[in-house]
Every structure is written in C-alpha cells, then in structure tokens.
Length: 59
Image (tube, rainbow, N blue to C red):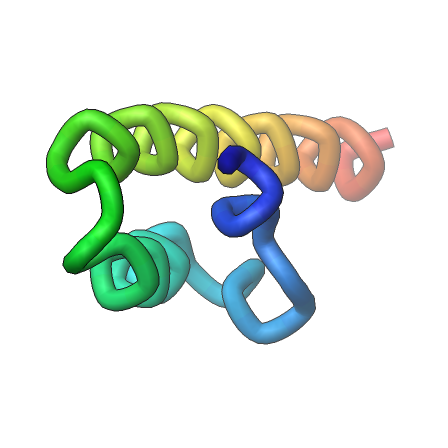
C-alpha cells in the first residue's frame, strides 16, 4: 500500500504535489486513513531529503 506514496522524480519538487497525487489515487480506496499515512511518510521523506541536502551543501 505504501509503495504508491514513494516519491518519484517529479514529486520530489514538493510534498504537496505528491499528496495531491496520492489523494487522487486513493479517492475510492481506503479513504482518509491511507491518505494520512501517505501524508506522514511523504512529509518525513521530504524533510529528510532537505536535511541531508543542507548537510551536503554546508560541508
């Protein structure tokens, strides 16, 4: 189920695009529960990427 929400190259631009894509994918799936799980996963992945990017740039 979580494989749908793994960010691809086009969704790395911003987490909101991936969230919109996930909402459209699961609009007739298991509903808000899956969307909230995807939201947490995408947000965590997004901030992890930015954190690693800042470390690489500053060092």
